Image 1 (cartoon, rainbow, N blue to C red):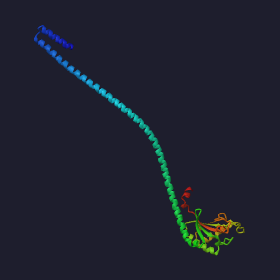
Image 2: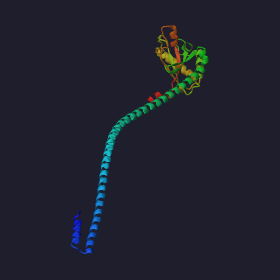
Image 3: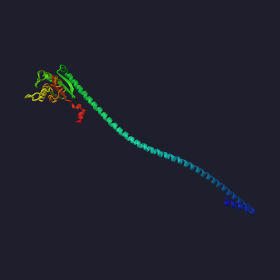
Image 4: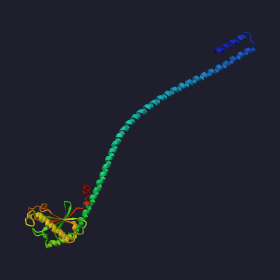
Length: 286
């Protein structure tokens, strides 16, 4: 019991025992009652505080549990973050490899496209050459059928092969009468290809010649080529499109060991000079 209340009770008892006036006695009793009410209120407040403290203790324990859970979650997040960083490093390496592979594939694709375009250009050039070959052969077909000449592709060049025996007498560079008619017909056909260059090439067999005019087969083959060029010009061909060359016996078509082989080697070839514009690879390299 609080000291003040104890004192009031004691005073009330003393006053009652001593015959103190009734009003004083009543005042003491009222004070005692008031203190009792105050004590009850304070006790209630203390109980409320104790209850609040208990609630706070419970909340604290709950917070500690939540903190532990959050710490566990944080540790998991840190672990995941470490794993993700490692994955990102690996992905970065993979990305570099993919970028390099993409660059390589891009280069390969460009090379393939360029090669395809070059192949198309070569095919177009080949088609153009084939068309010219067919056109030239068609214009000379009558003489081909008569056995006076042949048209063939040799070393990538279109060649009109004229039998020399019908053009020149042995050891001579003057065109024969039958040769003149044949060469004029050839010149008329070739004149249709005014945009192309032609080279007349003289060839002999390996039987040597040594005269005052022709010291060797070089001179003979060259003189015969020049004679054909002059006849072509007289027949109307553009001289700007013509040239002459002599090869002697050094580009045989057959073995000189037989009469037949030597006859094949004695020849005049009219070569259509390749157009560099139709040779894109060579033009680019130059």
